[in-house]
Length: 508
Image 1 (cartoon, rainbow, N blue to C red):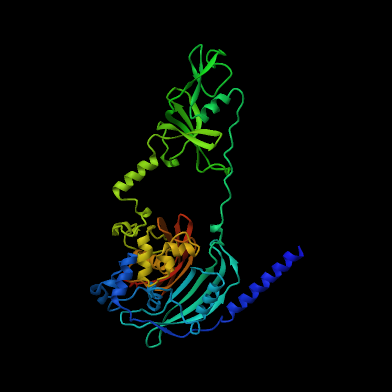
Image 2 (image 1 turned 60 degrees about the horizontal axis):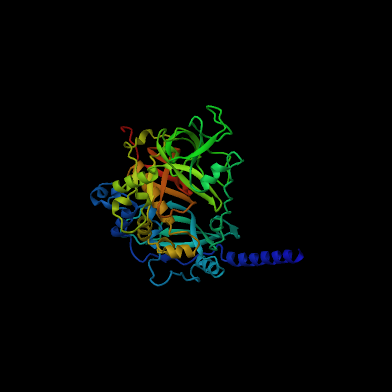
């Protein structure tokens, strides 16, 4: 026991020393990094294409020239894009650790085995409108390095930075507070082996029913028959329930029938079973009914009278259990129909799909009544199919060449099951969605995002939100919007956005 405690103390001491080393640069600022290129319309257009952003102020000169901006403007969500490092073939880009305190921290963490990286938080403030021709620079400050923490994806350290963005004249155009998790791959809850599923419990059996379960082990569905009246009955009994005879035999059923009724077990859940657990009353072709599990169908697709057939479940080498499934699997039918109609876009993850497969679907609502928008008003729900093409194209459009966003093997080596969407894309899609609702002429003050479950190919993200605050300043109205984007794994993104509505005149 003393040895274990001593070892623990030593480990804690090592962690403290390492943390002191990591935090030694907290508060320091790196050199000003000037974008390699000026803000340009082609880069803006590529970003809009990838994000399905249709705001004409970003891409249509005829409309933009007649706006208050007197020309094309850059999407505020592109603030971080302009100073991204760009593509460096053959290696991951490494900033000079002498010029960037965060780069020095990342290097130390990589050397210590914290090679996985994922963005967790970002807060963007927009101070000035950025236009083509502007040259943007960024100055980064290291705000914090957390102690070692255990997270769902791995054990690691959170690193928080603040970047101030300026134009060529030195005027501040925006800022970003950015937080990433550097973690050790394979140390998270998602990487832990799930507990072994316990064996399926065997049904109660006795001398009167042993023959039934023995027949199941031979994949025969037998029904008790009466030698005297030829009646059939189930469950088995010691005498005929019709005539009282004790002269009983069995017949082999066809294994086909119809669904008479069903119930769905929700709670309590027994680890040995799969849920939702559908328990059906099946009427066999022979006229008797038996209770059995119904499989290969979603609960919402169940219908009284639907044709079923027996489906044998080999629980182990000595036990086989009867269950029933639709004769024509509803799952397979639905899949074939959707494949034929081209509606199963959210499950497509290949790069060779056409554009219609990757478009963000938008629920169209009537034009927003800016004058009467109220706290509690909900934004229209938006469904975003997460495809490989979407993840890779938006990573390129945001100039993010981190391999975890385009290389499945690299992502897996760093503790993720597949490539995943970058935080710049999450911000861009949320901004696009709010623009679609509020109109192209809104101004952006800020957006604050917190990431949760990553967006991987084959999933769908559902965006929803509502107005939580409304403030007036003369003819200017500002709105605070709370939003959340969920995928099949849970919450992908949540946060708040503050926008300024176009000024409303009294005549309006």
